[in-house]
Image (cartoon, rainbow, N blue to C red):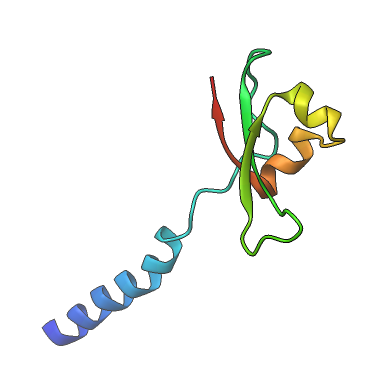
Length: 81
């Protein structure tokens, strides 16, 4: 009987572990900030092997035709300030 209980405990632990290993989902929109807040996004630059992280204000991103709120869920990294 103890063997069955032990198997049941291990089965429960193994089934639950992938669920707890999932990262927290990113927020759908960028966090609010002041005019000087930098929003760091992952960007792909032509000619580079890896993605780069650029940190600009909302106005600087807008000047490059980037909507920070739309890009944040997939490419947002962090805010500064």
